[in-house]
Amino acid sequence: MKNKLTWFEINVTDLERAKTFYQTVLGSEFTFVDMPEAPMYMFNADQESGEVGGALVKTNDNAPSNRGTVIYFGSQDVAIEATKVEPAGGKLLFPKTSIGDFGFIAHFIDTEGNRIGLHSEK
Image 1: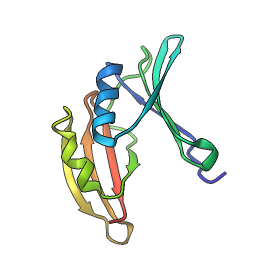
Image 2: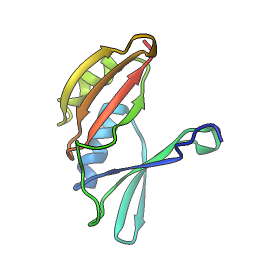
Image 3: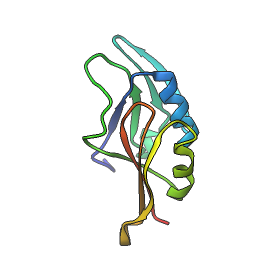
Image 4: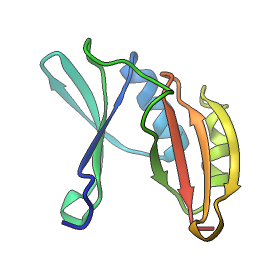
């Protein structure tokens, strides 16, 4: 196993709005899966090659949050995606910020109210 993390779910209240946001900011592509009581858009990931899979999920049991675990999406340059957050309906919490030898990060609140991070090495 290349990575201990194998799956993530981002809780949403509006699947279509969330999908549009992540398509705009990250350029992500999705596959719709109509799970009973948990419809979702799965991020298209090649889990065979070690990419971590995940989904935007709408359930009655979970709710979006900006006060818990932060998921980071990798990027070539965080500044590029950070500029797309607010035009896509999110809120940039802080722009590209150095974390020393570990690269750069930025945080935003997505259209659903989740705190999400971006990370790049340059």
